[in-house]
Image (tube, rainbow, N blue to C red; front, top):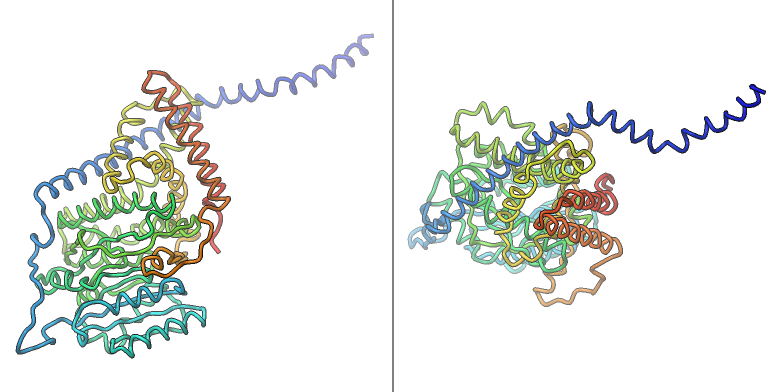
Length: 533
């Protein structure tokens, strides 16, 4: 009888673990949380608070400098010697420096006519300018079209050269390097570079070359970008807000303080002697423009940023194109920092202030810390404190510092202030992708040297020129889902702010739900971990 009763009890003993599996998981969580989760999260909070303070100080510093510049109206024409170029009766046009204009392109079917036409329309003595089209196109039909366009301008008396090569080694850097090897380049003093979607105004050279002519210590004159398709969709509006801060604040501060700012790869004029002294173009990273600028700066050369001079160009209007661009722009600087930090520290030609500015401010804070803290702190650490209440984050770090940084970032595009919340959510979503790319660059692994040319549609440029572009749907199904996720995140953000303002404790819960939305957007649509084609 005892045996039978023991048998009947057995099913109940097996059933108990199944019913209480949730309690057991909770018990395991409580046992591992205190010795493991809490210390790790506390350490992450400390590190994130340190990075947040770094970013906060950097933003406040640049804000103060910009305010001073605006109040005293310190323009580059007043800081440096600048006089308009004048004709010399005795020398004639030979008194003007010889200028080379390079246009690197790769299968640019939509925009090649606009870029070549704008370059050929530059106002400068015709015998003192050479237009060089560097075509790396792999599509024979596009190559024929580009060559035909060059011949058409040559028939009008324009000194234009059509150059091709039998490989794409080094991508854009390789094309520019090969372009500088031609014999006719030896007679040139300066080189202006424009990507295939850039359209300089006719007076571009008249406004930039005088800086180089009258100031022998200047190596680069950089112009600002003007986005012709900024109003095309929500994606382009978000990009405009980020890039306007870069051009309105970061570039302006670097130029005004005689410190350093990175060459943007296009819409700039280089002194060829300075370019050669710095070692020319190198293809060791995907940011060959920044690489050249750092090397030239270490040689003691100065750069000038002319914010009033704007060059029209096109923003990526698809998420795929924008994702590839951001991978290159985040991975490349981190990889360049890895390669050059020792060289910068050992350099003896520049001041200690300049070396500290380049290493700490330009590279470490802006190119590394800014991406990492946005993702780790706002999308992981803060939401994690919801399920681990033993770890607390000060309100100044969770609310006040982020709000101040956001306000300072938004000054570049005042017309888009009503989109500020969407921009915050968009940047947090993209921080997942940028952080991954940053670590790839720092560790030099995976897609570190991946170069995918940003797709240009040319629709906005065609509209400007009067041509009718074929209509096509601007918002696809994937875009709608992505925007819906952003809208949900915006709703949760407002709910959290409302609760916080009314003294309730639901702020972090809303933040946790919002972070889930970020991950859905980041993994599901932006395709952060989907390898490139």
